[in-house]
Length: 260
Image 1 (cartoon, rainbow, N blue to C red):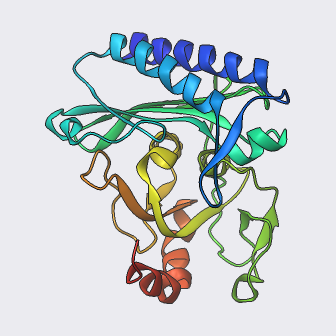
Image 2: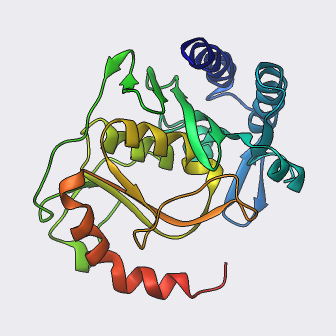
C-alpha cells in the first residue's frame, strides 16, 4: 500500500500543480445549477485524474463530481471517489481554501486518501490502519473533551451554537474535516444531504488521526453506494462526539426528512 499511496500523492500533486498554474487567471467558469459553480479547470483535472488513476488501478470503478455517474461502478469492490477541485468557489474567487481530493474505496470504506492543497502548501495523506499525515508529519485530533467552547470552521455561528468558537473556514469541506484531524478545530458538522466525493478522502484522514466520524445523526458513513450521497458529516475529537450528536439531533432529524 505504501507504493500505492505514493503514486496517488504524485498524481494529486500533478493535478494540484496544474490547478495552481491557472489559479487567479482568466479561465472559463459557469454554473451547473444556481449556486453550484464549475470551471474549465475542474473538467481538465477530472480528465487527468481519470486517466492516471484508472491506469493505476484498472479494476476500480469511478465516481467523480465532474463525471456523469455510471452504476457500473457498483459492480466493482474498489472505486475511485474523486473531487477534482473541492472548494471550487474559493478557487474561482482566488482564495486558498481548495484542494484536489482523491480516495480509493474498498468495500464501501476509503482505504487510501490524499488531499493536495497547493495554494496552502499542504498535502494530507492517510492509509487505513496507519497514521494520517500533513506534509509528512503525523497528525492527531485536539483531544478536547468539553463540548462548550469547541472550535468549528464556519463563517458565522447560529444562536443555538453561540457557546462554540468560530475559526476560519475554507470553502473545501474536505479541508474543514482535515482541520479537525490536525487539531486545528475540534468539530465539523453539516446537516444536509451531500455527495460522497466531497468527504471520502477527508473522512479517512480524520479517522486515521483518531477522530470520531459519522453522518449527522451518528450513523457510520459508507461510500460507493447507489445514490453516492450521505446525510451530512460529523467529525470531532472523540471526547465530544456524543455531545455533538445530541446538539445536532433535532435539526438533523428535521433535515433527514426533507427531500434531497
